Length: 452
Ligand SMILES: Cc1cc2nc3c(=O)[nH]c(=O)nc-3n(C[C@H](O)[C@H](O)[C@H](O)COP(=O)(O)OP(=O)(O)OC[C@H]3O[C@@H](n4cnc5c(N)ncnc54)[C@H](O)[C@@H]3O)c2cc1C
Ligand SMILES: Cc1cc2nc3c(=O)[nH]c(=O)nc-3n(C[C@H](O)[C@H](O)[C@H](O)COP(=O)(O)O)c2cc1C
Image (cartoon, rainbow, N blue to C red; front, side, top):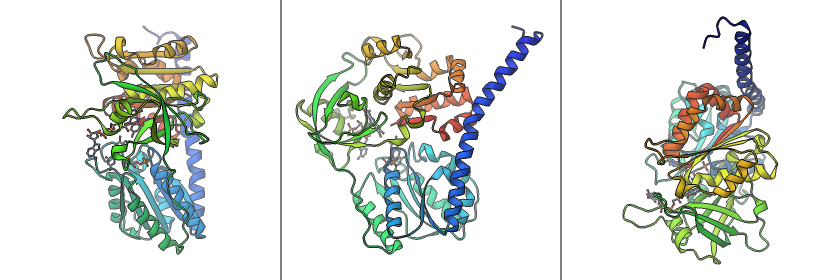
């Protein structure tokens, strides 16, 4: 095709390119304005001289503890400011007198999504911080090879910049109450208060397992159970699409497991989609085995609702949505699709990957009905053709359309496995949109992930 000698087309192409660039830049500018405002507030707080409570959190644990830390400081009359780590710049750290960092670790010893910019840009450079006093609460899980990897790296970097630790880093293995109590004690000591507010997490409650069915009989993959749970009588069941539950299985109640909610409050029940985990020796996963095989329908399951702010619709409720996932990841995406249908918003694009259409077309009737109502549906069955195909391949094949949706303001939600799917999709999005544009979308809350 030659367009160079056709001035009308040339103008058209130039116009479209400019429009696309403008739409891509808009979130960057908005985000910049937001950061400038946050920075101004931080600078004022630093001059007061207040403390900064900075958090980096993926599923909300560190964020919750940061909010409790802030409440304790304020109760003691200390002016303090809450900030997401990525909203801090070098000058904030240089001006601030005391910063308390509460950070979790993701991937393989990496920063949570929201702190990637801080980790990449700031921690990659030298920032003299001789006046800064700080403390680190590092959240992690000893089951991972790089326990508290990001918290440790942050602590090391702060020390190298000349900052002084108020007390040694405290590491939390999952939600170990003893480590949190230690942090709370140090805080009370620093703040000079003995009446810190109660920090206990909301209690588990016995929810009734009202229904359970296998969604993928005959599948080449492990069984996937659809579960429906009812709140105990009189209990407020307050959640939004995107939120999580924690389940305490009787055999390991100390270490609850997270599951994405697949329903909306209007359903009257919390729906979960649980993949049965089987260990190498043939035994089943503690929580998935309990939920799929042992818990009795009609009996109770110990459950706690958890806000998952990073994966909620929030400001994206009015935007077109691109939902991408695989396997049990349909859970979090189904919650959002249900919410969208209820709100009468039909500009949704679901790209979903499983193995074979015959056995793994999860929630097919529902998806078909939503498709008739306007859902753009791309089901990618990896093993239904000779060459293995995944959602990231389908994304690359639809690159122009994806750019168009983004130019129209769409937000991207990813749910499912971190290895393979989420990493592959991230690489595809980087290729299609460019790394800066994807980082800007993430910073603007238009690229959100619930991956595990
Ligand atoms: C944010 C989030 C959302 C999730 N959503 C869903 C969902 O919607 N559906 C779903 O099916 N799953 C979901 N999961 C995964 C789920 O939480 C469980 O991890 C999964 O069900 C396996 O738990 P299990 O108790 O059955 O297996 P486990 O008994 O925990 O075993 C799983 C594997 O974890 C490792 N492991 C666990 N504990 C230890 C330990 N103490 N030491 C060493 N290794 C260990 C082992 O490699 C083991 O093979 C989600 C996870 C997260 C973080
Ligand atoms: C996919 C995934 C990867 C994780 N990787 C690590 C890790 O490498 N090291 C670690 O110590 N903890 C790891 N964790 C555990 C979390 O850090 C821990 O659950 C923490 O409490 C989460 O806090 P948050 O809710 O504030 O994000 C990982 C958790 C998930 C779900």
